[in-house]
Length: 151
Image (cartoon, rainbow, N blue to C red; front, top):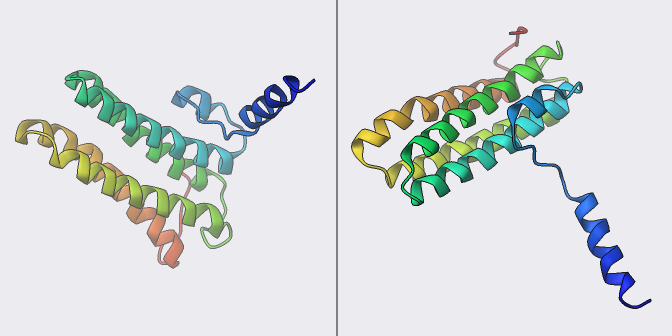
């Protein structure tokens, strides 16, 4: 009986762990737009980590592909919240979450880009700029300076 308890606890913890979808297709299938937004940001974070790991391993093509998925994921997050049709101030919690996560992603991208060569940095810059633009839109929603229209 004592051996069953640790297995039960471990199983419970694994089942309660937050889902981190590995692919954007899984996220796009989420019917709840607020959940879709959060899941897309989780994908962005995981793809940034994958880009870092690929870069460390010397696989620039995989790193660049993962970085492009980061840009797609943050755009999906913002577009999902816009599709709700709600004003940003009406679902402040979700908009603020997006603003904080994208701000952190911009910082992480900046740090990552500092390790790259000049040529690689120029290839990665459009992704960083796209994430910054999404962050600015989230920030505009938080500050009440921007009214969103559905994409």
